[in-house]
Length: 338
Image (cartoon, rainbow, N blue to C red; front, side, top):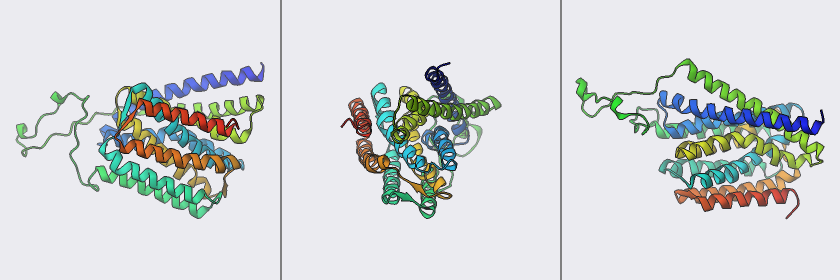
């Protein structure tokens, strides 16, 4: 078989695996999160975002052990740009708008801005050392602990609003049962082995699908004589960001804005702090020319625009369209068209 057609077939099969994996992941993750008492936003940050970020981490680990340390920052920066400009942009366009919650504005936006600033600072000299990698991992740990602690009262039990889709007739007041006034029984969704299996299979499909999608786009790019340096921050980043796109778009259509946006915040923090920080613990990570001269400035501007949009509480469809247009400018710049 002609190599071109072979890799096209691999690309299509991988894409199907990504779509199904994202569907199963979203289907099971919300139930898992709610069953252990997490809010929908925390479900997005801790479960969905980490599951959809595994492709970036897996690809980076393989690349690092093969000596391609420049792959990590290029993939992380490219994925974060795709997450904001494509994923948020496309989700806002198809859903009409995305609504930023008070928690998002007060906590996650500042944390994302600070995390991005730290990443830009450690990457500005073109090299990320083991100490800087450890610092980024520490920052991510603090990010997660703060995000979770802020919604659980610092570890104390805190009453949460019941999910609107759960029939409130299933919830009986404790007072009616002779309990204390104003308390409500905890009626969390019950998990079964099927939910766990669907979640695990979804993550596996995301990982395997992303791996072969990356292989296919790289091979196709080589066959079509496209530069490898540009591939990492464009084609590879887009490939590994497809899970985020599928999960956030699906969540946005169902008006699950916390999951749609929480997925992006969690994924971007994971990409900057862990996908880059973990390899830096073992290898000296270098930024290639395109990543340093184009990727870093675009990341700074894009994050600033995203923070401004978030402060306004609504990310409207026209803003989403602008994000997509800005991404086109990025790709054109990388390919030397502008």
